[in-house]
Length: 263
Image (cartoon, rainbow, N blue to C red; front, top):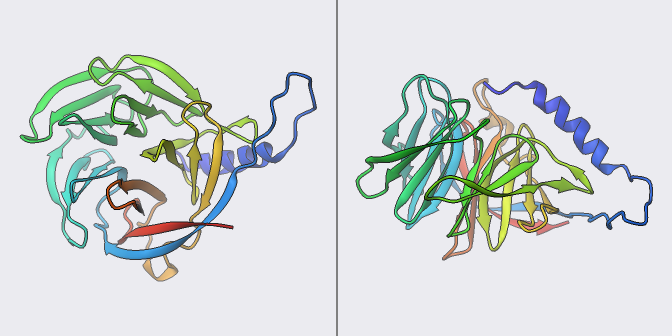
């Protein structure tokens, strides 16, 4: 399991991002991200066995990739369903990570196994595997290319046919690299990302890597809904047709449709 020490390291990173570097002629202007909170529009049940690693809403169906060794799966469900349908299971030696659907194929990352599994969406049969260096965390698509995170401040642009990296984005918050970029979702031309172990979702310009917005999701899951097994916020999905945004977390008992509200 990813170390919880990351939480402390990230808090130090955010503090560092708030400091102003010394002025230089070549120093670019520091972008102050727009601050948002949220309004809950709808609440749906979410399976508390699902250690959420990837989330995507496609044609009325929620797809969810889950993690942990020995229980990593891809499941599907309609909003409001209590029990998801298991579509695929990974071997016990693999820890599932981010997923995304593109062109009739589903891509599933693994954490430390250095492999992306590709399946046919219609039949659920595996088509091929791709190897990649380093860890796999989050995955999304702009409809043509894939975007992949690895727990650092880097997001790679990837060719879906070959899984070759075609470019990289360094995510920055107030001029400083922001690490622990996790689950990803493409929403209206921007990359939305969970920052691991925090209640923040960041809105990233995919051309520059600059964090242009920060959504504070503190308090989304009530104290009454939190148990000893409840883990961090993770999972962003978008219904592009109806402009609906969904978020959940690892082993959360609820999935929320939210609207972001500028502070």
